[in-house]
Image 1 (tube, rainbow, N blue to C red):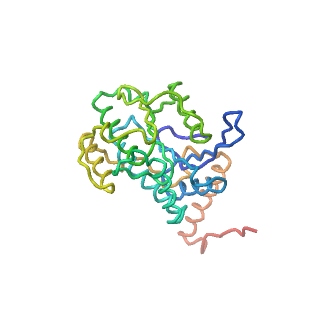
Image 2 (cartoon, helix red, strand yellow):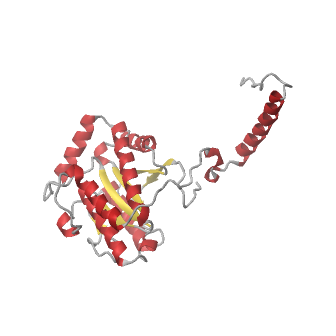
Image 3 (cartoon, rainbow, N blue to C red):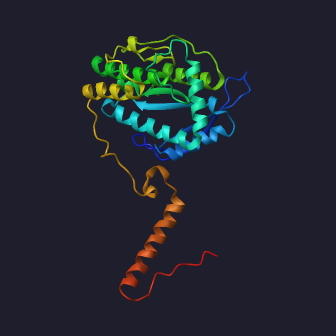
Length: 288
């Protein structure tokens, strides 16, 4: 499969992992390459065909190298996933999932925390680029993601495809959530290093984002206001959107593209003849 490194293609595919060898189980990894609730819902529903919803984990990938669109990306992604869950499960199931998540984190659970219905893990990608930013920006990004992860009952981990240690750690995460293996290493809250925050191990007091206590429904908005004040968000309206997916270079199919171009040329000639009055209408071939 090919994809543009800058703009994710509209994709949905399934990967299987058999790991570690002594455990005879399979982890189904559904990678969604485009933010639409229907695609995410398809992955959630697909995973539910073979596993209980309690075993489903959402890995939410964010680009650390672009702090100026980090919050808007997170906000959009979270909204899409929330909608996908509503499309995949009925209200009773969602409430049961949420109750179970609260029960799992009952010990020391702060009243401001509102755990996500499904197990959630936030991955901050492109750490190799992010680490070169100034400490102030790394700190506000780190504190914001810690606060968001803690509020949602999620884990938070930094990742880079160019760092062997971080790649190994991300694979360990898959093994942990898929097979229940123990995660090696300890928690890291040093903003000069890749963050490692296990779900349920943080607290708002240790994050020290300096916001007043408020009701859970307002927590995310409060965190947002603190972040966007420090890091104004750029408009994403200038992103490249291909209205016709057939023009997307990520989906090149030489034979099909050639036949399509040939047909378009034929239609163009027929349309010209019709407008000139040479033929009454464009003939449509019988599919049989």
